[in-house]
Image 1 (cartoon, rainbow, N blue to C red):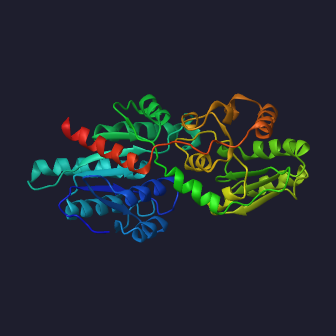
Image 2 (image 1 turned 90 degrees about the vertical axis):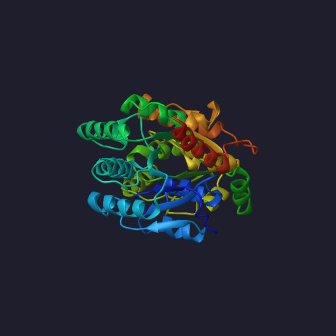
Image 3 (image 1 turned 180 degrees about the horizontal axis):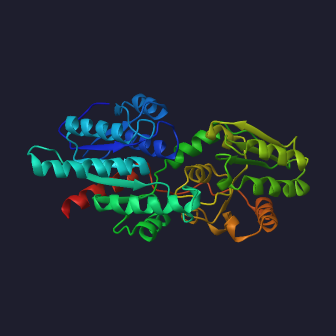
Length: 376
């Protein structure tokens, strides 16, 4: 990919090396580019940096993120800012948000003492904020501390973006954020649909192949899914359930499966290729306590799978009412399992002509926020 050094630099800072939702967001941007800007990504070495290099994107692979520590991350960002003189420093995820705000605002102080210090504008995209603090912070005291940290760092941030309207509402309610631009995660629906179709495995007559793609963690509602699946098996004896992913609850879930007599119909394959998994499935179930703008739901919707998901966070902005069940927190476990089971049996495949924000439109939305901030 040719580098246009005449364009202003937008430096996107990602503090984690793994290829999750944020990494997909960034790699999608790298594929289409940011109109009018030269995109450079700062991240630690790992899956994301490998993927970006494969795409021919500009990457500054360096000590940055929780593994490097705050002081080292700040020093790294300072060095990259001195080198690139970016017009924009755009952070993703809380650690990078705090490092970016602290780094740039200390540079503003230094500029008072000496001339020549480059000061970029700071933007942030919020990918993961929940209505219930315990989802990400665990304890009430940590939630209060992080709320204060976010409120303070927003004072030194020039532009705020969110991946769903629900996320923007949470930013306003929890942190007092104002003027948040909603830019949904982009999706090439035709490409996803084609990829899933290319590895489609036809089901046996009368079968129902259920798929879960998530961490095996408490906030994902997988114990309710297993209980609901047991009820589904009573109506559809040939039904199967694939619980893909890894996490702390694997042994507990396997024990639950055994106690319910489901050993022959439930599998735990660990990490899988999500496209291939969707190709061998009919129904995807996601019972999270909270989601912001789930790529899993977007992909499944584009692929034409039947869907059942909790009506939390940004899910209602993606799915229609027939694909949603109430939050698990609004029901006791027995009622929740029965409700989910009924919906699993009744639901049908999604429409093939699913329309969603394209990756190019996502990039344009980000640039629009940059340009709007420049006008203020």
